Length: 77
Image (cartoon, rainbow, N blue to C red; front, side, top):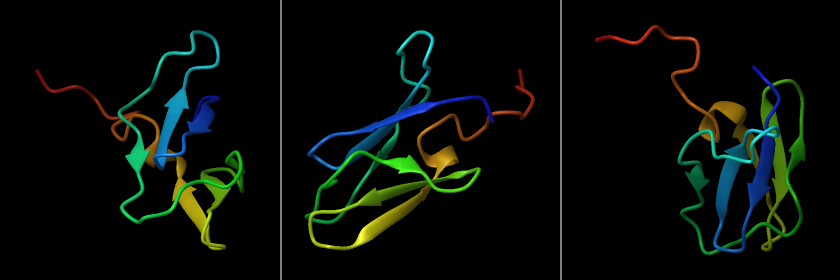
């Protein structure tokens, strides 16, 4: 996977950005619980994101959730 900058906001949305252009790589991931990120997400291994949440729990999120989930697959036309 290419490099990606992951950001999170207080509404619980995580988005992967292209570091060169700052454009979103996909729609991102939205938490479905009544919690928010307590700090910035960080890399946790080669394909995971670690984010502490406001309720004291953590979120381990796969990078495909914030990037294009079909990266590497051929386009069907």
